[in-house]
Image (cartoon, rainbow over all chains, first blue to last red; front, side, top):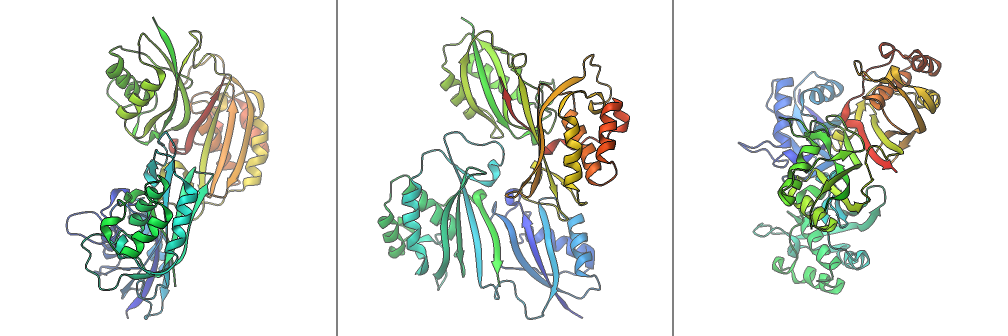
Length: 247
Length: 247
């Protein structure tokens, strides 16, 4: 009988071509599906809450899959963790209702983007934050962030060439905090959904605000313009973390 | 005219065979000396405060070198940082008195050892802490740590086969703290000097105390026995950080 399993997954995306399975490149989905095949003898398909791009990390990605197996969730979790490379960890495995769908049932997702803003780069943990040498005006960035909270059309921050009919998303939470322990500036954003590159395009544009090249009002105008050409560059992948998914 | 330069160096030791230059393997010292040769045309020799072993990290390694160059410390630092791989960063470069010697003048050095003690390993930052699955009794470990503070013969915690005449060292500070932000247990130790593998052998034995296999009094007896055979295993290199050097 088919059972529905829910995984919570932590991964260091540095060595992967993102979540989604690809023919020739190593991906998170591919690595996990391969181990599930080893354990169950069945080709299963993982459904993820959100497909993270190449180089993006996750503390709490969620995925579900259907499988006719006698293995318990505990055995599946332990087996996967012993078979998977050490940069992918299953932090939780539970059996859930057949109706549970990791993507459709997600009410919101939280991402964090980490920036190291100082004159000298870091050697330790350099793979987990974007190094920005030029001093950022954090207060100006915070004034800009206020404008994205609520429901807006985020077409200006969508990856160029993404053909989506519906580009309106609701941002429930967005803030920029100084993490004294790591020296990172941490941008946290929670929304009911995200367009491709949306967080990284927002961060790239916020950094232009921090440089004084765009005013907080100018940031708002970019959002309202729905014109990707007016927003800043896409921030690099390695500063981005999918923190958790709310159901 | 020969000038004396002092470097402070941060490095992620994951990819290196330690500090000390070797003929065939990549080392921190080798990487920096090679870039100094590129910049100054002179073969210089770095003198480090302490030679970290393969896989050990540093936030504040200190080294000095003599060189007859017209380059300013600022230019040297900027040049080194642009030439070095991104896992080695010169965080400071200054010209110092000719008498300054990074090893002989060091009054004390501080190391930290990070342990991740939980049931599930981590994917993010796994390269910066030792994963210990079995629950540790932190209070017992703290009771044991008290016994190493002060001046003692640390022969029991020296690497087997190290021929040193003098194995007495003075520990000025040693404690074990819960770092809530990372979930790590952080062992900090400051001493006037360290024997080879001393911190990692102390940590390996402390973890046996945490497991209940050695009592805090038993730990003290091991120290007094001066017998390496009685101490625990050497903790892995990747949890260890040279934090800074005091002059």
